[in-house]
Image 1: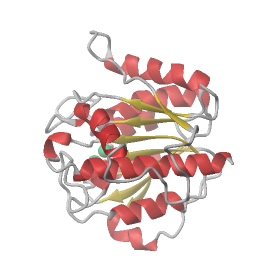
Image 2: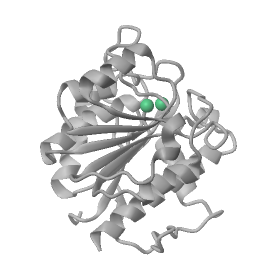
Image 3: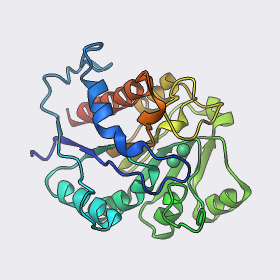
Length: 269
Ligand code: MN
Ligand code: MN
């Protein structure tokens, strides 16, 4: 794969979910929505993804063998990053971002994360599990894998997580303060970790944790399209097709995928 081709990787893994399973089913459903005959492949900034050579879907990770899942994610991501500069992963619960960042930190120093989420995911442990989907950003920060972690859309922060955010220097932009955000800028590369539940359940009901008071699809797109930063990768996590009988949330996930691809391709030219 050419170095400037964005790899799109499915990660069908949800064993670290605390409440419901389902995000392991997400990768094929997001691809199906992406290619739906109900829409075209043009992005808002004028790129026809149907013709663009700037991105390529690669084979999903295969968790059927009894290998350690986190090791598999880290090594699979590491192998892709040997040939390409940017990977966008589809599916999975949010726990996968920790092994992904372990691979990314080997390639990129001074990396930053922009996390879209209703939840800070900064628990030290949840139900005795330090790798729960409620914990990945505590692991990432304690291992010093990134320079800055900026969270947007947060509306469930607990006292415990507020303490950890402070200890790790996490920049939390709570949902109630979102109106004050005009443009986010970063002076070194960023990775976007997009938890679908950052969106209000009215826009994206197909998630395991319905948390009212979230952002609109448009607000999320505006933040990404106005970023002053070089994007080097992204994940789109926590889409639960079991809660999405009409496929609405699958279309939202596909839209986010299209527009993140579009911003990265625009950065290449
Ligand atoms: Mn999350
Ligand atoms: Mn969440």
